[in-house]
Image 1 (cartoon, rainbow, N blue to C red):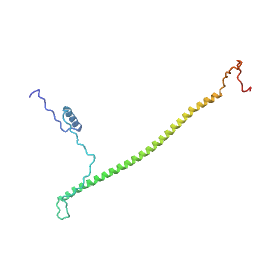
Image 2: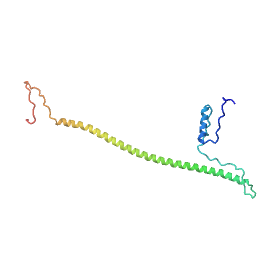
Image 3: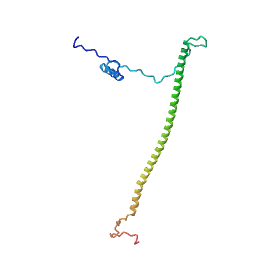
Image 4: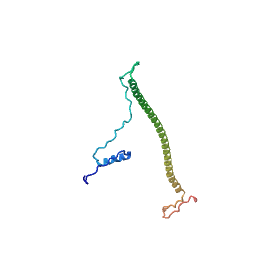
Amino acid sequence: MDSESKPKPRVKRNLKPAEQQAEKIKEMYEDPEKGMALPPEMPEQWKAYAPPEMVKHVQGSTAAVGSGAFHMYKMMRHFESDRIQAMQLEADRIKAQAAFDAKRDAQAQLDEAKTSKNRAKREKKKKAQQRAKEASSAQPQEVESEAADDLPRKRRLVAPDSEGNEAPAPHSADA
């Protein structure tokens, strides 16, 4: 034996699931070009197949029915019960979906009503604030004009009369 020859890799048996997964990942990293086996896609839902148009092996009511007739009957009954169960599940699923849609639509209507009510309240409040702002901005102008009327007036300059003398301003109390 050569001392340089590699020993055979030890193959472990009875691996635990975590160890199996680790081995698969290790193999995948060793050769990344190798394709990866993916599980097949599952069908969305099992659908019932149509009942057979022609039933083979029809048994009649005879006294000498063979022992295999029972198994054929049992198989046909099993297929038919599966088909009926699948149709029932599909009908239940459609009914549940319709109930869910109705409930969701009713809740959406309630939400829309509440939202529109709150929107109307916000608009009303906003308009009231705008009116108050307009009233407050218009009111100080009026106050300023009233305040100007209340202030004492300055003396007016009087134009000189024909002789060049300035006439005193007439007082309302003197007149």
